[in-house]
Length: 267
Image (cartoon, rainbow, N blue to C red):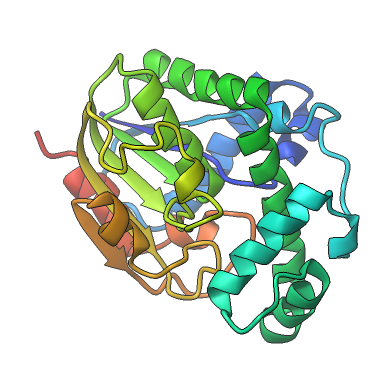
């Protein structure tokens, strides 16, 4: 049986609100991940899929919703927001309001709300020492419990998983798969990672494959992980209709399932 651990991205605090506990939230998330992955995984596949849950640690209030207005973000969140969007469009000024207006015009209002939510959760993770360490410990505990062959980390989860695999070197991981990863964002993420001087594959990871849809606004700059981290493989794919805040489009891709069940099953 292939043991797969997912590490979720942003916007998943709603699972905690709905279920009432991190454990139940993790179970509900795993059910959703399996529902998507099950549409693409090879016939007769045998998999134990679980998801490490940490969203409640970034939302002590269980995640009150935010309005679709960049002015509602805290100053540090606005800086991340504007810095990220200038990577998508270098002609933009580092102004959250103007950057948000451009994003809504070019990608739609859902993209702007996604970007605001991402900036808020990313800022909490990077600036709150307790939340950062607790999130990494939650992922490390999930790795210790499952001993996964494959760790699949989406969006913000790729940052948490990457740092966890450096901070808690207790188990070998056969395959590390990052989906829509923002790890390589200069000035926003890459320069604030821990450890800050080790932009390479974590020591106990045998193989690292990064997968991104060129239309994924979180996975910038294009090819950045291959250039900065020297991943073993960097695969651009077309995942179809983009679903903000969720990994569904990636998990339903036969390209992604082929990597998980093909490369992950190799001994």
